[in-house]
Image 1: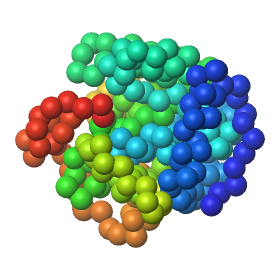
Image 2: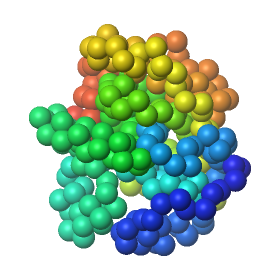
Image 3: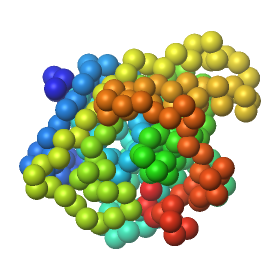
Length: 255
């Protein structure tokens, strides 16, 4: 278990309220294994990237980042910002709405760049949704996190996680908290993109950077699972599966 840090940033009322409500629940219903949390920058703009395995893992990851002194700005589905009460909390907590599959996605990118340039932490799931890999391994990544990194020069900190899917299996509402499940988060060294920064940000450069990011995350997931990932990352398009929503229904969900 990595040592926690004193809060470095002054959160708004919404973040403080969420922590007061959610953190005691997480402390009760999970066991936490946080490894190399000291690799999380104590201050300054940075991009946190992680694999996505459950609707529960943003809560568990937010808990870890908060206890290491940071207030992350998650990129979240825009419809969450339309829900009564929640929309006010998300906006006060400075979370960033993403209008997926629309031109509005550019607004999220602009907001994320401004946050990073202001010294804030931005949290991105490069896969874009809960993994569709049948065995839960990281799937092919999208280029958004890489684009942010190459535009701002901010470090990309990879995190591999496992266990959240046992608390709340993907695309279900069946919480399993007795006995408490262990959620493991392993923080990696910054992804080396130095040779790409300053180049023209074209499709080839973005794909190279994204592949490095996904390779770093996958390596950490292998460590968390004590298992070897498949040699090729799962690609929903090649499998004929929608990129968002339940893989077995074609219906869009919140991740």
